[in-house]
Image (cartoon, rainbow, N blue to C red; front, side, top):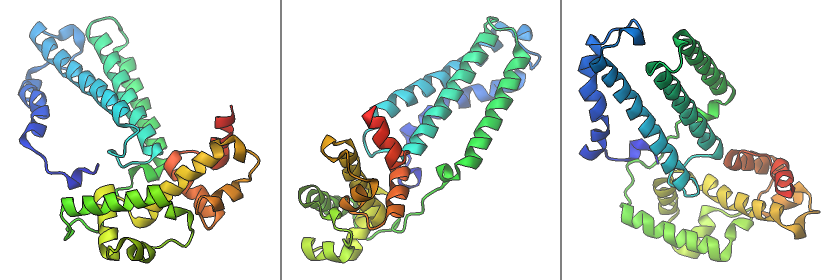
Length: 261
């Protein structure tokens, strides 16, 4: 869920309280390494580290609870990046705690390790720039209330699940307007407002799910990728491959082979 669409509450800001409390003391803590720590200073250092580790673990736990829902509104590749990023941060905090408690003496090695992580993340970002694209939503000032948009989305998803109109490659908002008796503008706004995606992306999600079902089906094992693409509602192989890779993180052929194994 995009933070730009949420209203931060006071209780959300309380999560930053430990850092705000500890920040004034950071000016008095020596920087010569663990050997120079006063016990009180070491307490502050360790409190920050445990605080970071706790939040990282909580985020990982929350992520795995929500990974099968649409609450994150992000692609599989972005979910993988988030997991890697959390894992790297947790590993770094663990190394720091080992140094802090004199269980790991290579303090300078921690600096090299941190530099390696920075280079690793930088090269990853250069190879996968789509991970950091910030979507721009057209209807941030929509005339539809959240309740109205929710009702429209309920009608739309019910129709998609029952009648599967997305299997028609020529499906348009105008055709949906005729069936649902909902103006095109309101349909588009509801999809953007509730699902945080445009109409094309919304339909592609259903078509990719249908393609995944066919690729996993033993009855369709002899089908070509092209046949599955067209039977899923796509009107071209290129659009099918692009949408499938964006949503699942895999190519259709890789997904099919992994399922066979």
